[in-house]
Length: 465
Image (tube, rainbow, N blue to C red):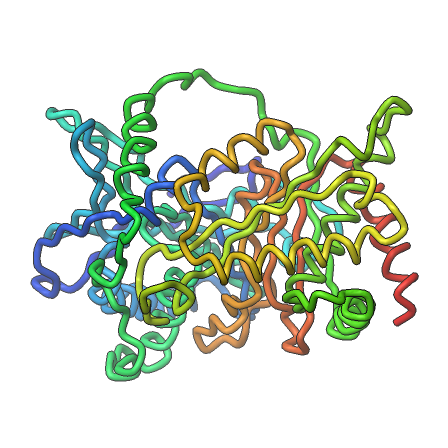
């Protein structure tokens, strides 16, 4: 038993969970052009907090055994998560490899932290949540130069007589958010059914890379980017400064009534009838509040708002939106990046939210029309805008239905994405009350968070809801 008093965390068990013996043959799966852009990205860290008014001993004796067993059973269907991403040097192609005994790291811990404080919406030190995030086993390099990346780890943290946190860290190259949430909901279904896999018969994952077509020869272009990345792995590995120092994180809720009011304001002036949804107006609202809070402290009288642009990045699910059909149950990556460019003067003006929403809606409509058009420039477009320091990205989506992840303890009390503490993205999920609103999470330094709260509340008040 290892105790870390500073973090108020006690590790009770550390093990690995594998699919049942003999249930999955040795398998290799190629990575398509949709995967390769995600290899260089950081891991996704998602925490699910549940109310659990029982002591730790009760959890260890009655809950933990079935939690592990149901995870094992579910992994035989989602076996790539129990494998590794194999990254050979040029001219090799990356792939996922599962072999007998492949597993997921599984840690059990106990925390004395105040559960209600941990799951609160108000600003808290970002490091408050970090003890509940599992660590993936380290990557390693084989004798023949293949870099091996573990794909998934879990940590279950018990808050005695208060709650449970199911923490996950996973490699985005294995599957996108939709695939991961499909896996999580399948696990909860198997747990609730006491290990009966027939509960999943209508929602088995489709692990078939042949459904992803390559009419434009995108793989060759993406492979060049991949080879550059894999050849540079290990470079610039010196420790860097703690990017989370001085940061706080908070959750902001935009209700359904607020979203409907915003949609009405946008559609009233949107003569081109762009794609204006709750997601679009929420993105616009949070983005503009964020830009205005930055400009309150960073603005210079010499700034030319008509020449300076801010950029917004989000992912669009390509399932059933491409030139070829991709089933909703496809397990893997099928995301297309969408980048929006808007002048600073427009964003910070009186109609900033409306103009931002129109720009985001227009981009979604154009992306749906283009399919894979321009895909060869996806990565370079993102890199170019990221270098300006004015790119804001979205992590997560309300369509992932994170609050439907119910092990039988009820819906999560809170769902958090902690990797935004490092990459500066805005996390987004559906509202926990199920009433059609959206939760947005931000990690900012304390002074900017204070400014953001002020701007956010001012803009909400102006909506008159």
